Amino acid sequence: MDKDFGDAKLNGKKWKSVENDPELKTRFSNYLLAVEFIDSIDGNYVNEVFDRLNRISRKLERQELRHAKYDGWFITTAETESEKDEWERFGVVTKARMKRMKDIQFISELLMVILKNRIDGFDQDSIDNTYAEYDSPQETLIDFSEEDFKSKLAFAKDYLLHVENHNSAVTKYARGLGNFYSLWAFVVLNQPRLQHPNIIAERYADLMSKVETLAKERDLDKFLKEHGGATYSKAYIYLRNLVQASTDQAQRDARNKVLESVFLS
Image (cartoon, rainbow, N blue to C red; front, side, top):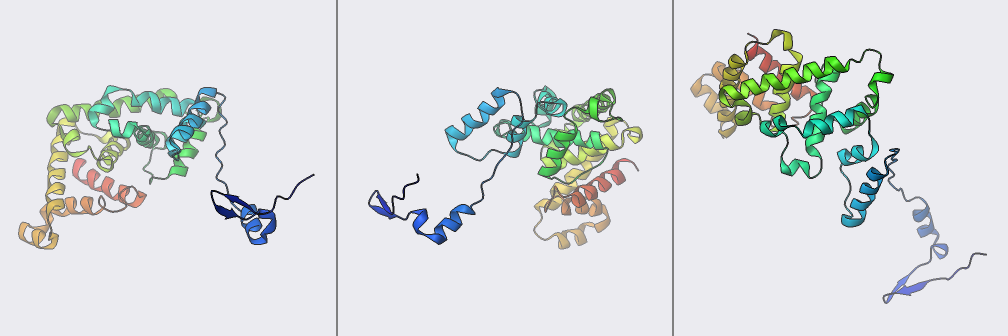
């Protein structure tokens, strides 16, 4: 039998009983609780989630939740990739990003360009859906070829390493995630049409040096008039789509078009 204890005092403050306050009872009954279902059979992942919550009481990042929830092909591929030296050399993996798995999340975005053969705007739900779709792709996706995926991945990394070895253009100009995503997507999506990486390295350095010059100017209109608009026109379009909402698909597409016009001409 339930017992009504009425109002009570705690630490000198009077606390109302839910049963005695209809408005409070309604608010209590309608309170929404955020729930994340974890269907991983690996108890270590589940324990890690609760251990983090119990120790720091901090909301988990979406990638940390993916780490706890999935254990299939895509999560394994992304996390294995993050441990390879070339990503640290490119500046994608850093100690700061590793703390909350931001590096793995970004690498996941890069891998998605290969899997979908297109550029997407940044969307946490889309990443979640891709993790679910490619959890066991060999069993669920008829057209999936892991061999083809690995071949394209290896080519893109090797190509950018050659660009970097030529003039350090990747680490000098593409350490920002927006720039690296665009350079990566260009290489992945234009593999059959790519010129020698030394040529791309020179053209990329020339373009991005102009972008950096424009980014430092306080009066862009005046600068462009004084230095000839045509000389900096493509750099201006690239910069304009880098500084605001840079992860939206429209901005990523616009930057890719600039790279294609500069590199493939």
